[in-house]
Length: 437
Image (tube, rainbow, N blue to C red; front, side):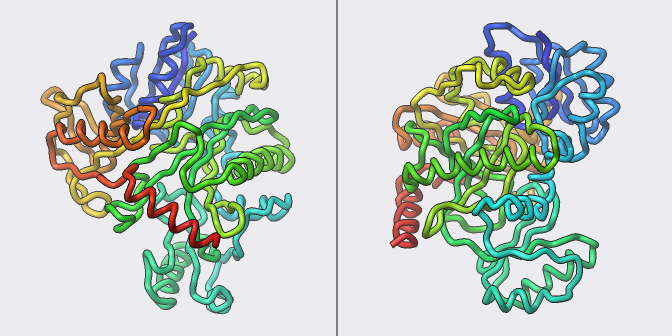
């Protein structure tokens, strides 16, 4: 077996590691945009190129005679790489371009939920021009969220009270987006606790992964600008401390409803990973947004505790017989924390070396993200650099292990020390308890 993996972040690093863990001993062919040292160690063949160059990716896949592919980055799904691979005779874990709209177009997603009566939408309207914007914001009483209708790397959404303080500041952001020709979704601000629930699916059958919670804000205490995700945690019972069993069941049911709706809407089965970014509110759960691939960093929590053969799952997704694959997870908690360049995300340090050599890889796993391996060391490239992941039956013990190893890393880096700590988790439990009371 030979598998094509597209991408070179920490998400792809753990995907590659999960492929290589298979008892089938598959070879890994990686198409990347940088020299990821972890992936280079795993790969039988490794090619550098642009993620937007579909021709080069397909040419590489054909020369390597891969059996199937798994696509990491959302941008590749958005540009239809899965469709082109399929035309070349290579099936992939990942949705077609039309199905990937569940992530690539926020308006498509909101309208899909509305059309198929999936009760997860906040109040929302979609705008191509300023006409009616002020009236709609008045209706929402100034408590609104601005969502550009496209991929923004987890950094495009602006929330009242967090990213702008007044209605006029929000209006200025909206005008700037509209002036750029950008469609904008304006929706009510939901109050609650966010969580991620990902699902393996072949378009007919669904296997739900453990819930996890990402932490988007750059600074401790959920302060600072949004990022792609500073770290995440998951618990040994596959739920989260602030969720009820009904919350988990509701999220799973919603993912299943969306899978069915996508097939009905497009006429094609969704084959890949469907990732719901949910929010537990005063009554039940709602959807913040969907992603059409593994979440990063949450993938590092869920694949760390996956005990089934990952290649069996991938082939079940591709072949449409996922129901024949036994999927099970270890009952262990995980904490993932990203080390990012000083100044990230607004003014990050770049082209500076870091050293992770002192980290004890018997205690934590290291996954490389936005770094470039050169002859004289590991260089920062400006985004999230390295993720450290610990596993333990106890969540707070896992968090302490990660922190102890992070202190051994050398370089101009920063991270969130509060992720997975009792203080932060207790505050979130109290917050949702207050909302629901």
